[in-house]
Length: 446
View 1 (tube, helix red, strand yellow):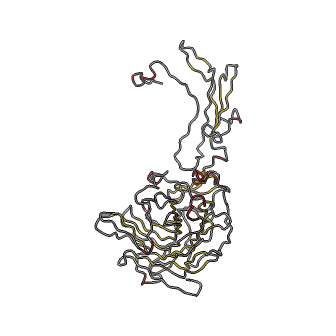
View 2 (cartoon, one colour):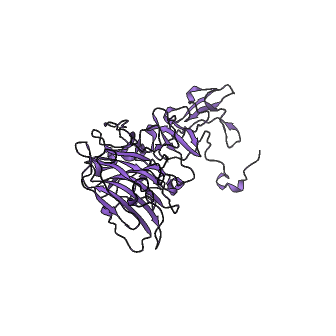
View 3 (cartoon, one colour):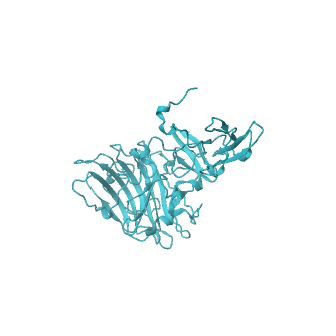
C-alpha cells in the first residue's frame, strides 16, 4: 500500500514504545453525550456477529517475529458507554482477541437527532445528561419533574412557540430537546459567559452611570416592583424589531433580582443575530449568579434544568404582531416552588423547567425586585443605533402600534398574585425610548 518515510518520525527510529488496538469516536458538545456508535454499537458481551471485534492481535519483536501480547492494558474512558472484553484462543483462528462497542445501544448514552427543519437540528438527550448536571454545585441535586403549583390558562393574544417543533413532535420520555449549534464556536462551552456584550447589569429607576469614552451602550425601559416577591408573571406583546448591526440585540423580558443584582433570573423574547444567526424573534432565558460577572443564555452552559420534552428554550415565536393589525403575545411566569425552593419557568402556561436554588443564594428568601420591560444593546462611538425596542413605536401610539406588557403581577409571601401597587418607571433615553403605565379592572389587561 505504501509507507511512512522514516525522515518524518525521529522518535520511531529505534522502534515504537507502544502498540495500541481499538476504537475511537469524536464529538464536540457541552454537557451531554453523543449517540455516535463505536464499532457496531452493541455491547461486547453480545459476542460474535453482534459486537465488533479485533482478532489475531500481535506485535513484532526485535527478532522480527510476530508475538501475541503477554500483557494487555484495557482502556475504557466512559464505561457506561464504551466497553472492551478481552480473550485468547489457541486454535489459530482468533489468537489474542477482544470485542468492543460504544454508545448507540445504551440508554445511558442517548443523544438522538430526531428532526431537522430549515437547517435547524434538534437533539433529544437524556434528561439527566443535560448541561445543568455538569455544574459542580448540582452533583447531588435531585431532579424535580413538576412544580408544586397549579397551571393557569393561556392569554387572549397567544403566539405559538412554533419552530422547530410542531404539536405532533416530542422527545421520548425521559429526554429533552436541544437545538444543535453549528458553526458558531463563540457560544459554546464557557465562551458565552465572558463575552463582552452578552449581557450587562440592569440599573434601577433608569439610572446608569455613563463613563466617558465607553463605546458600549445598554438602554432600557421598564417598570419595577420594589416589594419582596416570590414570583412574577406577565403577558408580553411579541414583535420583530429591527436590529441595525449584527452584534446588537433587542429584548422584551421579565426578570427577578436578588441582592443588588447579585442573582437574576430572566426570560422573554429576543432578536439577537450574533447568538442565533438570524434576525427572527425567539424565546430566551438568561441568568447570572454573581452580578453579571458570569451568566448564561438558555442551555448553553450548566445551570437551568429543562423538564419539558416538547419545546426548546430558544424556540421561534410565530406569528408576530403587525403594526395596526393582529396582535400576538406570550405568557411568561417565574415563581419559587414553595416546597423545593427551585425557581420554575412557565411559557404559555406550560412548565419548561427550573433554576436550581443551589445556584442562587441571594434568592433563597425571595427576590428583592421584579422588573418588566425592554432592553437594547449596541456598541458605537459618538452616535446612537437605530435598533428598535419592542415594536419600534412610541408608547403614546397605543394598542396595535406600540409594544405592551399586560397583566403584570408579582407573587406575594402568601403565594397570591397581586397587581403592582407601586411602579417605578425607568427610561434611560426618553427621546428614544419611553414607557406609558396604565391600569384596567376588566380582567383582560390588569
